[in-house]
Amino acid sequence: MKSTFAGLDLGTGEFAGQLQQALQRVEDLLISELSSGDDILVEAATHLAKAGGKRFRPMFAILASHFGPNPASDEVITSATVLEMTHLATLYHDDVMDDAPLRRGALSANARWSNSIAILAGDFLFARASHLVSTLGPEAVRIIADTFAELVTGQMRETVGVTKGGDPIEHYLKVVWEKTGSLIATAGRFGAYTAGADEQTVTTLARLGDVVGTAFQVSDDIIDIASVTDDSGKTPGTDLREGVHTLPVLLALTGDGPDAARLRELLVDPETGTPRALTDDAEVDEALHLLVDSSGMKEAQARLEAMADEARGLLAGLPAGPANDAFSALVRYTVDRVG
Image 1 (tube, rainbow, N blue to C red):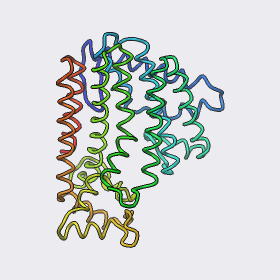
Image 2: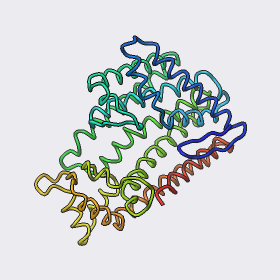
Image 3: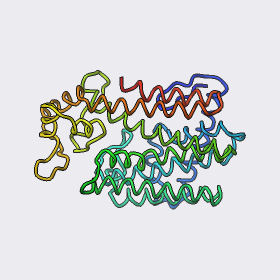
């Protein structure tokens, strides 16, 4: 039986089979829990769950559970399912805020039904996640409650934008951690905690989730720019078209010289100093080519390498084995995928 993780082939064998079985248990519990409500809610609430997805957060928790003595426990499966429910709930709400027409190759809930239905479906997922996590005890409830707060804070921080006199790069990294890193950190924490790992191991895997979650987002942001020069099939410049300034852009905008000056002309509103969304294809193409060769891109890649080094250091302090190997492969992939 073959298993994959974030696009990585984990091969075949006993460990891959265990991972696949655990993921299937998560899938079964997820659909069962979301199908247990009133008929008026079930179709909308299961819409994204049935559309598929990488199940990154559940898999992260399942891998983390293998650093504890009871990786096959029901509590591990419950915690992994809570994580996916929480993630799905945020996607419903994100799509409403972004007016997104598609999600996972299918119509988004807001496009298929309405914004109100999508918001309520997301709320229902949060409710079912809360119900499920309550079976894990008060400490688990506290952990997920804190995570809910981080997710909401990150979305609010991104919506409000950088405060006057604030550091845009610090703001960006904080938003990335709150919106992405915090839930993956909880995946590491939950997986190890529910498998009975010791406190130090739980803390280490939570920190690994912090680092990997942030690194994966930074690598996505680099790819959004770098794909202008390759044949990856990705449409480059999506963030620029939406007026979103990611880490490579923010770093490039602080540079000196004519290229940095031209980027500021293209990407920053001269009157307000706020990001400018590019609608002209020629301007997008020019900005992308300036960014690819910029010092900002090089610094972003260096920061990504530093995150990967930290992740490797954390893994070096954990027991060797197939779970450690899988996490190590993920760290390599996170860096290698940006070219």
